[in-house]
Length: 420
Image (tube, rainbow, N blue to C red):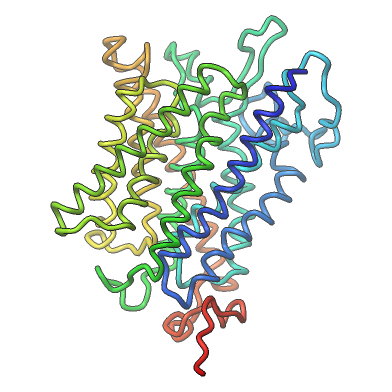
């Protein structure tokens, strides 16, 4: 066993886990002061629920072995509860549980991302039911499509999920997704759009009606997200090597460029660059570079960041034109940014992109992967959310929303102001 790679993977897993509390600060600062606890609790609820489900059966669904596609007969039943993974094979590069831990943090952050679309108006219990059902029916299977892979005894590729490896049989190349542009960001963004439609608009929804109550929280959250994202991207190499180093530097370059691009758009459009814009731009760049971080030169990573920052800065206003209330711009940043990063590889991926290969095959498989995940996640999230709304109710009462849902849902206040 390689102790260096084992330490690397465990540290990367810890960095990715930190992203979810970071997301709680990022989202918490964006909502109104009387909803901050509710918003942050949806992220912490995801840590608790998805952490348990992953150990019980999530990993067994996501990594069923050579079957590739998730079905009852392809689940690794021996991995339920992780009992069969306690022993480390002598020739393993790292303990199986180290990989389980790393992938668990991906499942947690993906579910937590969705919550931003329903800020200020969702019941916590309904959210937790949705999170558990969606993770089981959507995230765990999609993770298998993207991340499930295995090697033969000689080290060559043996099997894998249909998105990243299965399409090689038909097209000669598989879709590229190094760290989760499809499984994490497109997946979460599509589900966020579905829930925004199910819950409907906030009371008084209009441009400028809902402003962030705490921009310093937003900046703190973005900083924690960026810090953890180095584990997200570089850690996906599963080894401390040159590919991990490339992923790391691209995870610096792309969001830095996206941050600047977002601020330029704000300056031109609104006359002033904002701190929330800087934070949002960095996150948009992080989203876009996630699938591409090990497949681009640093120069093309900067170009991707500029494109993602500018396009996402414009995309967040689509909700006002199209009439859906995605409270914290999960669609505009994660769905749009994930699509940009995934499709961008069709043009600029090292070796197989259009500018290197002269053909559009890589773009075709990237599009198949992106839109397959988007449609699957959107449809199932819409159904799950609709059933919850029509049974126990997903949305709080209008009067509770107006008053602020922290005290109604959790019996707490984010800020207790006392007069002397």
